[in-house]
Length: 175
Image (cartoon, rainbow, N blue to C red; front, side, top):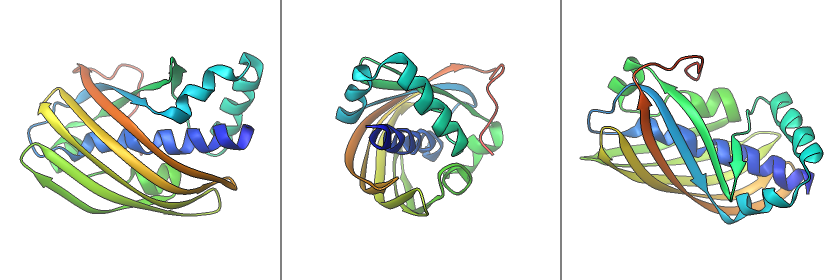
């Protein structure tokens, strides 16, 4: 179960960066990203002390596990003006999870990209696609098929994002 949850942490962290792929004028600032999936629904079955151990283990691997509640992972991401202006996925994949984004496309308010993970913790392929309904909201979906920490993972997730504030407060932009 621990390996499955660590896999969950890695896979759940991947879709967060898709917020940067908008073609239209995306608002910089603090964004709340919510990811729902069948795998996330299992998190409620883990006792709090075991969840803390998993969170600590994920941090050791460079992943901050988002808050998981009711089958959804919610996290906050700081988007700088430079990130919003680039309209491409930043180096999040390489720096945080060891994955690389490929084939990113932007047409109007739609975005899509592929990502490949090939490292000691995570191997596999995935896709992300979505639509910005306006500069402050998006919805999307990711698919991932691979192996995380030795555990097979074939998972899809639904993602939504909403702009919260022009100020990121204590939330730092991804490196």
